[in-house]
Amino acid sequence: MQLTSLRLHRVSMPLVTPFETSFMRETEKDCYLVEASFDTDAGPVTGWGESVAMAAPLYSEEFLDGGIAVTQKWLAPALFQVEDLTAETVGWHLRHIIGHPMAKSAVEMAVLEAQLKSRGQSFKDYVGGVVDSVPSGVSVGIHPTIGELIETVGGYLDEGYARIKLKIKPGADLEPVAALRREFGDDFLFQVDANAAYTLVDAAHLKKLDDFGLLLIEQPLGEADIRQHSELAKLMSTPMCLDESIVSAAAAADAIALGAAAVINIKPGRVGGYLEAKRIHDLAAAHGVAVWHGGMLETGLGRAANAALATLPGFTLPGDISGSKRFFHEDITQEIVQRDGEVQVPQGPGFGVTIDPERLKKFSRGTVDITR
Ligand code: NPG
Image (cartoon, rainbow, N blue to C red; front, side, top):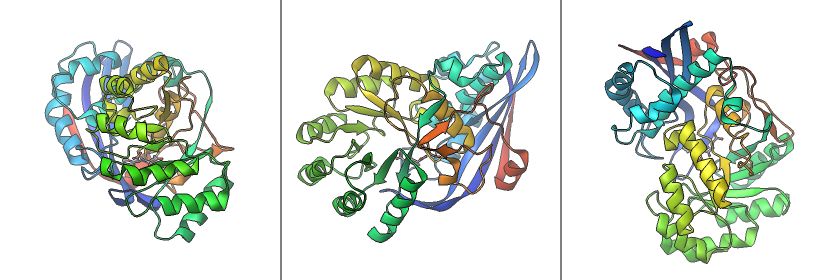
C-alpha cells in the first residue's frame, strides 16, 4: 500500500453529562479522526483512525493541536516516502520521531484499518481474539455530592455494567468509596482511579482504601514514579494498577520487574498503537499480570477497536469499554451497545464500524488535508 493523503477531521461531540477527573472537568469530547487514503494493487482503499489526545495536555504531555501538527509536519511526510506501507511497519518508520504516541497510534490505526479492509479481515481475527463480546465496565467521574454519586452508580448497576470504576482525588476518596460500599454492598466489582493525584507521602491515607475490598487502585502516583508505585504496592493490600506510567512495552516490563504493577490498564493511544498494546498484553500474560482495556471517551470507532483488542485472552478484568450511550446521545458510528454487562464486538472487516457522514458533518470543527 502507498499512502497518498491524510485528512484529519477535528470533531467535537457533546457529552451526556460532564465528566470530572482529578485533573479536569469535560463537557465535550474533542478529538480528531484520521482518514487515510492509499493506492493498492487492487485500487484505492481508505482507513480510519482516532486520536485520543485531549484538548489540553493534562493527562499526558500530548494535546490535540500538537497531534495535528506533528502528523502534518513529521509523521505523514515520513510515511509518504514508504512504497510498501503496512500496519506492522508504521512504528518502525516513525521510530526516529520521539514521543507523540497518541498521534502515532491514530495514524497506525488508519493504516491497519485500510490493510484489514483490503483483506476483508476483522481486527478481532487479525489480533487473535477468542470471544465475540467483552465485559463492560463503566468509569464514574467525581460528583459534587454523595447523593448524586449514589444515584449515578445505581443507574449504571441497573443498566447491568459489570464493574464500577470511581475517579478519586485528595479530598474525594475515602468518603465516596465508603458511601458506595454502604449503599450497594460488597458484591459489585469496584475499583478506583486517581490519575496521578497523590504522592508517596499520602501512603498512610491511601492504605485506608484497603478496607473496601477494591479490585485495584489505578495510578495513584505520577507517571514517572514507577519505583515509588512499587514502594506503595508493598504497603497496601489493594492490587496496584498502572495506567499513565505504562508508556510502552519496555515500561511495562520495568513495572512488572519492580513489582509496581499487579495489574495493567492497556490503552493503545498511550503506548503508540494497537500493535504495541498487543505486545504489552502478551508480556503481561507471560508474567501472570492481569490486564484490562482502558478507555479515553472514544467515539464508536475507537470503542469498536478497543473492544476487538479486549477479546484477547489476557484481558481478564472488565475494561472501560462502556456503551456509546454512557458518553454520547449520538455516536459518530453505529452505536456500541452494552447489554447484561457485555459489549458485542462489531463484526466485519477492519473495526467493523463506519463513520456516518451526516454525523461527521454535524460534529466537524474543520479538516486538515495533508497530501504527498
Ligand atoms: O470509558 O472511555 C471511558 C473513560 C474511562 O476514566 C476513563 N478514562 O484516566 O482512564 C482515565 C480516563 C481518561 C479519560 C483519561 C480521558 C484521559 C482522558
